[in-house]
Picture 1 (cartoon, rainbow, N blue to C red):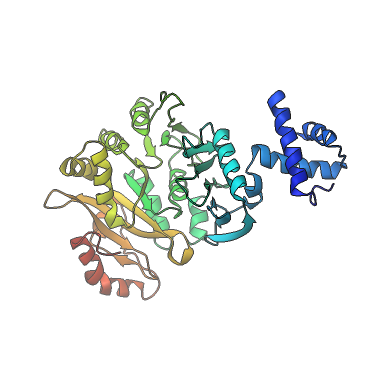
Picture 2 (picture 1 turned 90 degrees about the horizontal axis):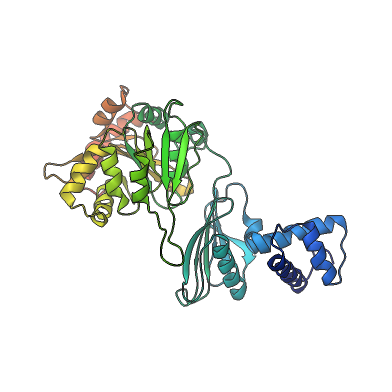
Length: 419
């Protein structure tokens, strides 16, 4: 039997033998263990074939099984749908792969991956969220919640920590954003990176935190560790789910409170998604400058509404949230994927309006080929110590000024209108 040409049933038999062996004698899936399984099947392989089949068995027993070969440079997500189709997201955008997973195989894989991450996934608990070895984030859903079959979502960590220069070279930071981003970190302004799923929020935040002086201590709080920071003094805290008995949970709000006793110079919340926004805003209002985090939002102008919704989960009414957020957070950096390319598309500043409500005032709009300055630019420039008026090419400044009153002012007057 060749490792490449082995019938699926023969490979399945070897995998079953290896699992039996692991149950009797836990340990790594290595060549000696696979060799024993093959001998029980009455098969003998050469050295090269043995290494190859060991790798394949390891993928099925302790790896991603049929999805393993899809993991490669630039891949951020691998998704299995109920019909067995497998989709991959990466530098070229979301596309269908040639891999197909049978219904029973998908269910078995989902259950095994959940178990590998220390979570339960079965008919009684048909949804699970877990962190796998290699910092892979797993989410699985079984029928009947997914009528067509098991759903698997894998979020893969970047194999490379990208710097701000790398992002600039990749086109994620069109001019004049490199200078603005460096000034944002140097001025210790509190900011939030926003955008939809897969826009690169975590990657950008990690690149910005790498600019923090080495003399400063960064404390990062996350639900699942994703932020990779090229900094000598960054420490990470990670929340913990409750065990099967419903005890032992440590949520993000608890970790924010704990972090204040750890002498943070920069407090970072990897993703704000619930009631922990209350603790974060309180922390940033107690002298912890330069704090930051990420938030899901459709546009920069939608951020106040998102914060109000999260604040309500923490018991903050609209006025209390506005009072806390306006003094705790200063800048919104919004990411998008125009034409499939991840890049910064908006900058805004947060302030309280005449009615006391929190609002986002447009500062820069980069969704098109020109830089459009908004009414918040003057305030942002003063806060960051910038003096030059941003332009994008010979005609950029004139075109930006010509569209300013028609777009930026209108968007400020009617939050959420400029989408």
